[in-house]
Image (cartoon, rainbow, N blue to C red):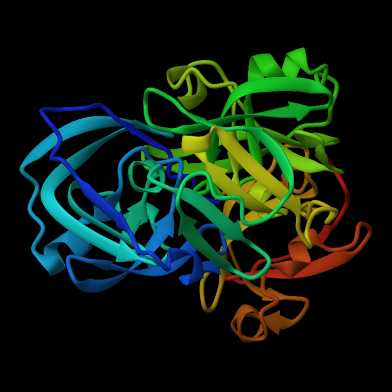
Length: 381
């Protein structure tokens, strides 16, 4: 699951951008698909060229990949170091970009160029950030897989209202309650596919110190990190409570510390609602969606895997899991599950599903080097 949170420092004087919202913007829904990591991927025009973008309110400034910049002739005129999840990255800046999607056209703004190509296997060329999205009210209908931009102040549906503001960094901020403990400010980040990340201090303050923990991986522009994680109940936005949610815990010195935030709400939680983000009006409006009461899908194997056409590569062994007890290691590759080749399972869409199967089930696995193992699934967090 990828996160793309970015806080670039401001250099020089930014060009004055011109943003126009069409009179019929309300009818111009933008269809999107959810990536495997819960990012919203949609079609966009960049300098008149077709592209695919990720809707990422957790990025302060919109940027394109270096490969796409080369294809359309965007050249960086300045460079700077930016703070991102996982560490520091270099961003180049090009001027004079024009982007268009839905009813919005934005011209004359600077566009970032990131060379971290390997971190973004979404088939996306651009990440549209808070610098663009803050112009308007953003209505995301996760159930229908579509969103639209509206003039600030519009209220296209009724629901529960929670505060939403724009921090000095440009990021969207709101609040959330975890086990009855209110956290604020929390960043609202549609580019983060996880549900909720909170600081270690707030985890302790919420009285969750005895909760069973395991580990998971997080990716950001700055690299890969391992975080403690657990399933917690309840998590609430205003008066709307989600029965259970997976929470990641960030230690001091991480991105939450740097951005002076108590936590970060990701798309994994937002997708349980229809969401209206309107920082100009100071509010976020939420209405329960089809997934509001859906249980968290928990790993019962402890293997986090990357799916290739013919193999499953282990990228992380979760702490206290059956896989950890069985001596599994990062980097090992599985080519056969219960006598069926991964290549065949991939065609059927079930290559990884067994990793969250029913507790008590024993899975027979053959590694790509011919080694055979069995793994009995159990609930461990």
